[in-house]
Length: 151
Image (cartoon, rainbow, N blue to C red; front, side, top):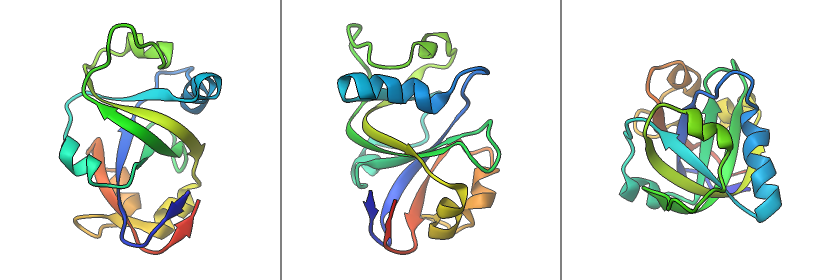
């Protein structure tokens, strides 16, 4: 995935239930049918208009994994709600108590090394250190690339 300098992307932190492999749970569905729905659960602090003005990529950080559990994903669509018939998402989503806030139709996902994120991105509004932002309580924020990079 090619990323241009000063591009802005959403970074969403998730808390995957114990015993669930976030990456494989999503990748297996995507490999089977060509896409998977990823859900941003809980109160949404990101506006659809702002996200849709970014390139169609997002970063996902599994909060339970220190210095890892980071993924970059390319998406084809964003929805606020999915139809009852749609089932292309991991089954563990049924056990999540928070309300779905925003759905991303992911067409590609891959792990990203922690150092690549830290060395090539900053907080988009603050220019802040990503390492500190990841440790904050904020569940989602925007990041900006500091150089051209191919991931």
